[in-house]
View 1: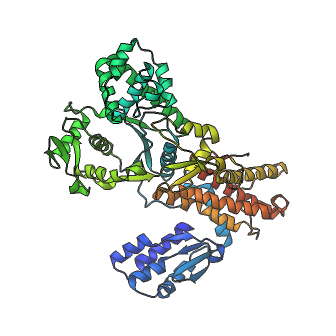
View 2: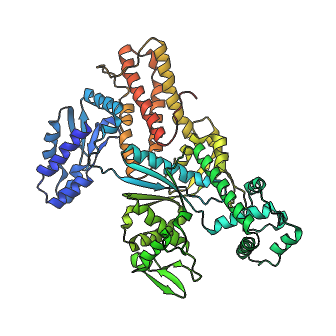
View 3: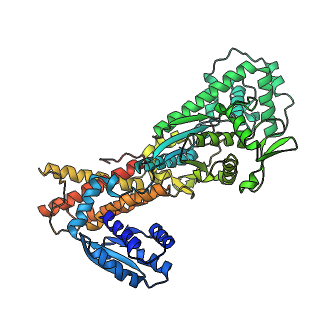
Length: 576
């Protein structure tokens, strides 16, 4: 019925309104047909008259007087009501209302006619944490978000590629290797271990697992740590340089082993979190600047032709020409590339792979980096609108209201694996997705463990499990689960069914706006409506004719809850 009503509204705009072509295009884009929030207002409502009146400076009732007869002529429409400043509420005949629910349940993907929606090849790059240690709870939110939008967009018909960008060529990997080396050969006492090194227990585990031929005597250790700079960052850089020069064989072995160990750990944690990637892209694959045929050299050569200049021995990108607040260095005075040079080459690689849209899921601390990347994209001749950046705020981890303090460098942090082991991957994903991604999230694991209404995950799963229990008892009575509604006048489920029908719209809105939290909000609302219905109606003692409609309604509600949870990467539970 949605498609018929929408088609009638669009035909009215095209043929019955004396608007110019621009006004008609605006109206076609802006008018909405939505489900009402209460059946007292009808089943469907449209703002077409309100939008049209604003465009034409006319009274919305004058426009409505021409539209209402068209809508009243549609098969299935019972009555039309003009409400408020220009809304038209549409009441359906009851059998049509029930039929559209059956249609939505049997073939949900075609319930909303999305023939006008373009299907795109979309790449989502997310998590992409530096491979310098285990994933912590801060990474979990980006992982849950990126995976969820991938599932939702795929459900809407888009071709999705999920990618993890591995920063395996930068200074942080050198610090990781240095930290492992220092632990392996016990070069420092615990109280003097460099502040800028990684100190987590995983560093010790890696160090113990490496087999090297080298043996360091005390004189070698003393030479390595003698006369180091006082500054923490200068100290770690000097240690890295000394190890590379004097212990090159051990350095290469330790660096490669440490990197492989951490990446393997990250992959295992993500698999347990039910996040899978189609591609792991390594920064090192972009090559070296010294190699003129490498991807990074070719990308920089592309921008240097027209949009770069030399100053003080460095090469600068004229990023201010493309909206950045200042020009950026892409090659340092010593000939080394900056972070931006690698990102420039990586985005060139992504866009050359033919994606219509690339979505970067970044931590909120990268907000200032957006303009820089947009500038590099435009400097290379691409359209910056092909890239979307979704920022994810850090999640504050609480234990019954008390904040858990964490520090990545010191090794004092709560890992994603610990969280999964504690409350499970599904509850973790649900809580991560329970709020808009760019807003702060307080994640209380004490609440997540509880079996109470305060735990929204439990509340939603309990609704699904309750329906499964009712179905089981219904079957035990010798009844068969109905595949259709009957003609009984019982309308006690209608408000619940109206919410169930809204699932398809919520999913589409969630995908169009990249906001999976809308599905969580929807799950809260339909679960609340179901629990209220369950508490007010003795389902298994209702009249048989009413029972058929009740059970059919519950089958649809269960299906809606299950499919919505699955879009979030969560398994619906049949028993609690």
